[in-house]
Image (cartoon, rainbow, N blue to C red; front, side):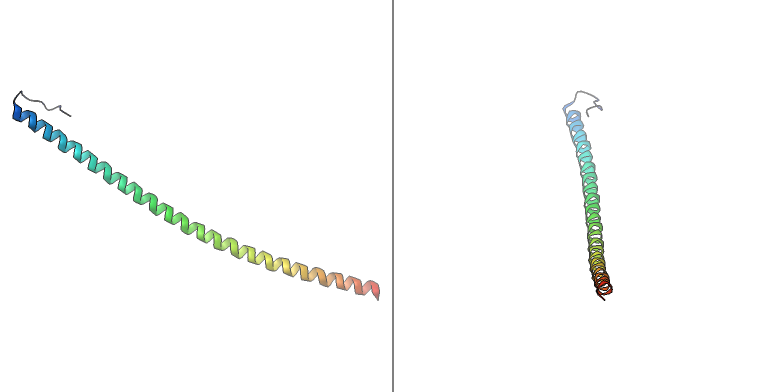
Length: 91
């Protein structure tokens, strides 16, 4: 800023201030665009992660259901085995 000083006239001084201010505003707008893009990307990534979490939760629920069914089948087979063992020793 202020590197383009040419002379000592008041109008050139004002011209330099206006030019420097325009450069400053342009830089601010560029940085604001970068922040906006980064925020948008971060939000998209967060939403995508939530979708993955939902899929993981559904998969875990399905596995828990299968495990419960397997436990029930094991309990049923154990009961049948105990019943068969009791009948063979009692007969």
